[in-house]
Length: 225
Image 1 (cartoon, rainbow, N blue to C red):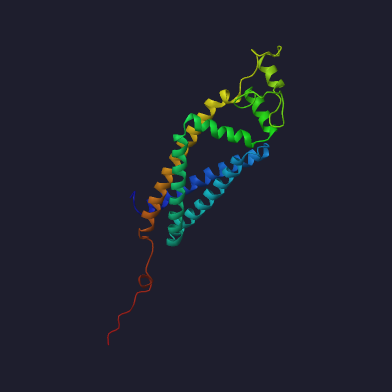
Image 2 (cartoon, rainbow, N blue to C red; image 1 turned 60 degrees about the horizontal axis):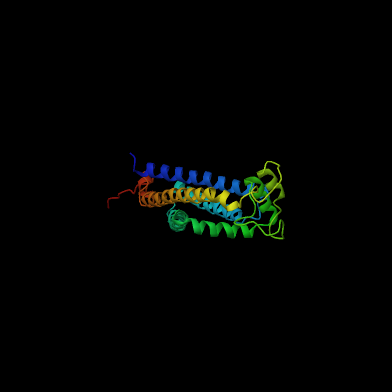
């Protein structure tokens, strides 16, 4: 019967298998980011840390669900509920960030990467600098815009009327979409974590129908004196 001991056990195992898959995807994305020379981005390390933490919690939940281990399930519930609070807060923050705050965070990220990464962004999105073009064509903090300006002008002479726009104008829609997507995905998974906590609590308090008391296997003999 759904809602019984077996149903709760299978539901908890299925949820933790899903978390293992999601954690594996996060770790793979982080490894790919490092292999693609994106190690300068701090978010890569954060993604890998989240993936490792999630896979450890999932393995704890799987072990507790298979063995019906009371201590494992208790710590699983506590850690997963704390993770739910953190992830729910971050998701709400992502959904509540306005355009000015997005621009400020993007500016901080732009300032934190090196000149090679900035050059890659400029070539990919065909833009120059972040918010305003530098006074000189190339400085120690800004890569040259000659290549992207030539692409923007279809290899015609670059003039004041024909040159690449700042990257913020090109990235504004992408940044807003990324914040909304991260917020929605984080909100969805945070509620699945809350559901997993509820399932774990329900499963932890349910008696195992296959468990037999020692005296049931070896019944006592009644001796008449």
